[in-house]
Image 1: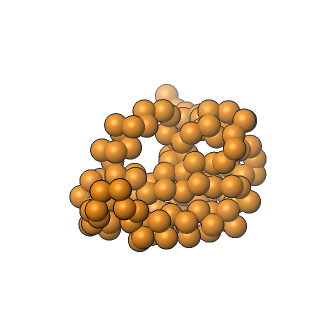
Image 2: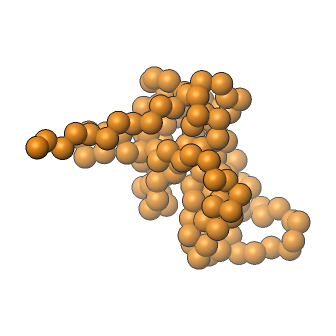
Length: 126
């Protein structure tokens, strides 16, 4: 019996943008040690305003990068990183990417929708 490749989920960005998103996912994995996910409306179909990409870190990893700040105050480091990586993703992919780093508990509690790992395509020559 031959192992059949698992079909990739349909994503609304089309080709070649999906390939560029996968390459961007591998860059994020190289930097953070985790693959990011395509989420939101672009993960569901062709009608989207922006392309939501999330890097979900364990609570401990997230807290080490972004120590808690006063309630209601934005974290400057988090904001700058997300904005800078969003812009890098836009340049690399040609897509209006909204990139955010999320704490795992927060992401799981508030965003139960589909998550498609980016960066798996062309991994190990596939």
